[in-house]
Amino acid sequence: MPSKSSTTVWPEIIIEYDGHLIAGVDEVGRGPLVGSVVAAAVILDPARPIEGLTDSKCLSAARREAFDLQIRERSLAFAVGEASPQEIDSLNIYHATHLAMRRAIDALPIPAEYLLVDGNRLPGHGCPGQAVIKGDLRHPAISAASIVAKVARDAQMMALDSRYPDYGFCRHKGYSTPEHLDALARLGPLTEHRCSFAPVREWLMPV
Image (cartoon, rainbow, N blue to C red; front, side, top):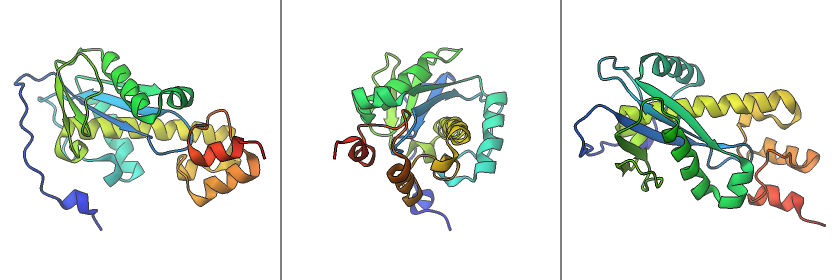
């Protein structure tokens, strides 16, 4: 059953730029209790369109991985940036998310001339652009960025799971599920956990 947001008809995005070096920018991982927040920037190639791009949350893991390969093969440029758990704790998740976005934009092998950023705020980069509410459903470049970021962060969670299998990261991807909270209670936080997030912080406080 499709989500309500996926069936909403959004107005057309009016872009004040007529070139082709538009970078879609999106992030994944604001809510989890562990790991980095990951952002991606993607400049799609108008000559090699990818059909069916949409918000990564609307896709199965297999579909995301298939699209991720297509994006990496067909796009003009793509890059991933992240902010660590320590940076999240120091800056807060909002500012750390924008830091990850700026790092992704700066890492593009072809500089973007205009940004389309998912959400309601630009990340403070010098490149002109606009923020787009529900942009991952409304523009293919932002959809592509959401997919690349999601696949990259899930891969990090799978790697963390191989190191600490008792936490179940391969299943909950770091979100505050009952399984994750139970593991925190039994095993305590890891250095990869975000100490400023309440469910982690309570296990760090002296009894």
